[in-house]
Length: 289
Image (cartoon, rainbow, N blue to C red; front, side, top):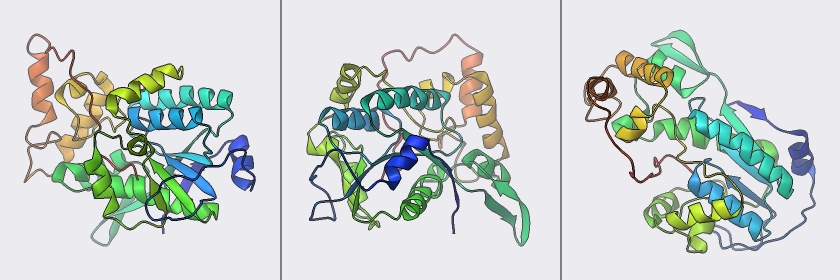
């Protein structure tokens, strides 16, 4: 059983306990053929999910909860964006972003418990492993994103919910992969439904008066591109290198899968800084629903 630490505002508690909604919507969803009573946003805090919320607000759609699953190792810009976005949501009369975390998880060496991990970073350090995505698995996303979301959903007592996921019209492959999994809720993909691609997402955010959030991902994500790694603050670089140095590496070179972050950072420090200006931002591919 997974326990959650929930950060719920007073206004959101009132909204969650109320059976009344000020707006109604009959969305096109996967797995549900009738009108739903609750609409939840699976919020990744990146460009796509932010644009999705902004457009839902513009269209006057009901949103009963906006849920962000925090691994404890998100980029500082992500946490700052959520605070700023909450103020925008307040002004629009919509619920604030609800941040949830997986409860502390026991880490064992055989039968001996060696500690409890409260974040993905701590789990990696205690296990001497990199995030699962480095090895081609989605275990880090499943454990620290999907499972806490499912557990939170059970705590609400809500039935007949639909979860809105921010895959855009330029990435139908992610929807296809998502459709393969049976989940205890119906899914909706508003950006695909409205034929909104990545470039249009940025325009929607700016037009809404919201600062574009940029990419949302763990600061030590193995899917990070080289310019993103080198742009990290020194303290986060050192924390990422600590994870890499403690990992038992056999099948991969390091956090970069086929290269070690330590080598990239050392090479950058030893020469003129690399110019990555103009490189397009892409999603990390972690779970969004």
